[in-house]
Length: 89
Image (cartoon, rainbow, N blue to C red):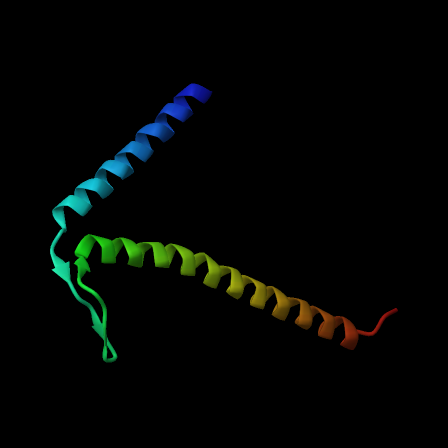
């Protein structure tokens, strides 16, 4: 069973690599992005899309972690407030 899982993982990784390679080879048109007066260098479309994807992979979990910590802190604060106002018997 362990060998089947390893083989399946290798096949999935190879499929992702193959799709990424095909995407890069099919999108070689050079474009320059302009945003708020700043113009970037001309790069292939595939490079820009992959960079945006990787940036999303980094920002998404960081934002999720921040929101989880903030809500946990808020929950603890509310719990302390409830304990302080509840009379003990």
